[in-house]
Image 1: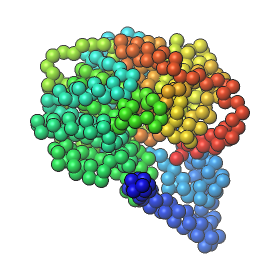
Image 2 (image 1 turned 90 degrees about the vertical axis):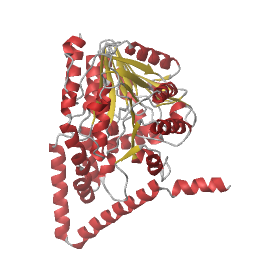
Image 3 (image 1 turned 90 degrees about the horizontal axis):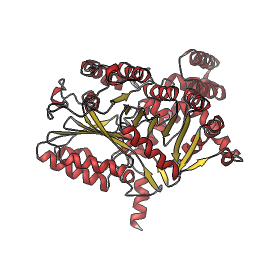
Image 4 (image 1 turned 120 degrees about the vertical axis):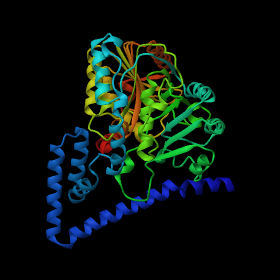
Length: 512
């Protein structure tokens, strides 16, 4: 009984809920103050109405996503004075100046490490794919590589088993960057390896997101790791102050070992990701192991983030691919790890996904735990299906968030009507994020098909072209289709209440 009430107490009185409460109180006070000012004098109300009109005109004029515009305009229409004031204060989706000021100079000063060295036309035969690779290299600044082998893992447990085996063999450094680190059996196993390696003189660095991990780690977590010789950066710590900067999270999942072995995928460090717990049935995740030159992209990615918050080194060369592996690596197609950032105006991840859809000839298969799409993505999905491409999307059969599930399902009808096939993963929850098309191109990484991943978070993925690993990814999809249930238009009929709720949620999903 004591444990039961203890869990309830800890669930209510934890750092996240207390901080969130302080923020909500500040928001309530702010709204109250606005109404008080408006009621104080007619001229104040006139000013606020003027601000509202200007805000609406500005929203229409700006090069925003249409869904984002509609959400704010409806909010302003329903709450004319309050809506305009809230837009002035919170309507800018760009990250806080503090984060931008920290990260931009570091990334700009280390761009020379990311020059495209391999001739793209030589390592990629297809002109259209070569253009996509060139786009990622220029706009996303991360080059494409040959001399890299890759291995795909269709489940989180297989992914982490391989990663743990490689960590045990580490001789020089291990870098980890994860959205969530959660205490449990998986973390305990990794932690013991890290402690042991730190004692051996191996350099250990960890970056984790504060909000992602806020309810999953003890208060003394950082202090304990530092005591064990493990260096830590906590990304964008949550503080009890009203700010939009908390929207921007480090959603990346990266592991780098000795500079030439790298891991990237959808799984965080927690027991559910490897099916040690089963609240949502069977948990399906995916990831990829890289060995070779392309790991350099992940290393620079990590060091840029690290040095933005704890400036340790200007010279990244000691962490290079061939510092601890002198021999050449095996080539298997084109491998291009890339990062997407909310700090610029380039929607890199979405554009890569759109390009795959627009260039597909035979099929496009997609894993995503959340399907909250803008007009561009919806149009591309439907157009591909209408041109005869076999477009299939797999979403969870058992959702982790009911509201998001309603919202995701609200897109099913239009997509299915256009010829897109929707599957829900019957055994449980699918957390994998990937695209594969025509046995020629694939992306495996952290990028969900929702507004937060595509517009607000720091994300990463691995782009593959003309690699033998792509066949393995496609085969995983074919197995998954067999154990998933296809959603038809008849399944969605008669769910008017769900549809109504989802319609409201869709309006405001881009602005929250």
